[in-house]
Image (cartoon, rainbow, N blue to C red; front, side, top):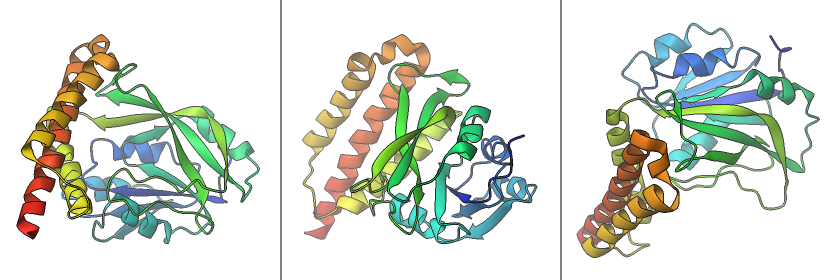
Length: 252
């Protein structure tokens, strides 16, 4: 076990993550302060979280990913925050390297995230992500986007943290369907009156998304999982723009 991490709070927003949250929290036992902000779980997420003495539970509404993550960060005991999702698991190497970092307010820090479908690593159409996740919450924050939020990077040096984080976003086909509905609705609400859309735009955005994921990003080399992911991307983009079209029509 790594030495206790007292100067960094880990902050997670979560809803119905019973299938993954146990592994996530088990990888965070070295953190003295773990904030879990739940927005309406109806499964065993909260019961699982209560097993961990370093986890403090907060419950509230979902305001969109950016605003909700910023709200959750206000409950952290420390200024430095490691933002995680409820389906991400830290490697021992990552945790050990985190204890060696001399934090600097002029820096923000990136993670290397390996993506999985069930227990299969997706090496092509998802590949690995490099994302800013460690930052001083008094110096920067997440953008206010309801989807595709990210930490504001302007004016900071970006420093990588060695070691991987494993990401398990989908365990079943149903997970894809639930998340595409949630993401597409959030996108439409966030962009109503700001972006134009039409059934034609929705169709071709979905079609290109499948082509991009399955062919250009070589999802076909990921086998069955690549096909499922490509189709999910197609459906997500179609419904993003068709929902936006309907909302724009209702606003007229």
